[in-house]
Image (cartoon, rainbow, N blue to C red):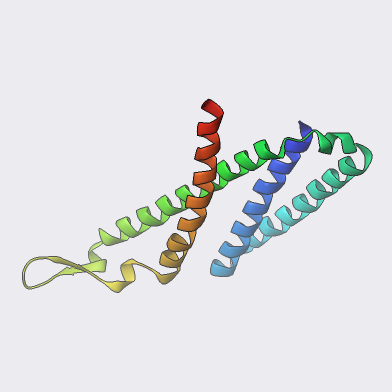
Length: 148
């Protein structure tokens, strides 16, 4: 059981690690760089702990139910992708309501300016759709199979 928890914590730590790296590159914030370095150190120690357990207690590794772990990881990725899509959609919606981002045309219709939607947000939104669909399909299929 401790192995599964270590694997899941390592996976979450790697996800945070990538998130801090991307956000640091975008903003050049020193706090994000420190978090990136901290997650690097955590990842090294977690990987070391997993290697130690694998070398000295290989029966622990053999008892891991990898299909269960894959199901949990796919569920986590699915939720993460869905939340990222919701955050992007909410940001775009909030910007579309700001008066500096639209004007009214001759017929009284609201016309949004191109700055409402940023190209990186569009790319992130559409890049996350296939990952969300693949992981969601696997997660839901396994969930339905579990109950049938």
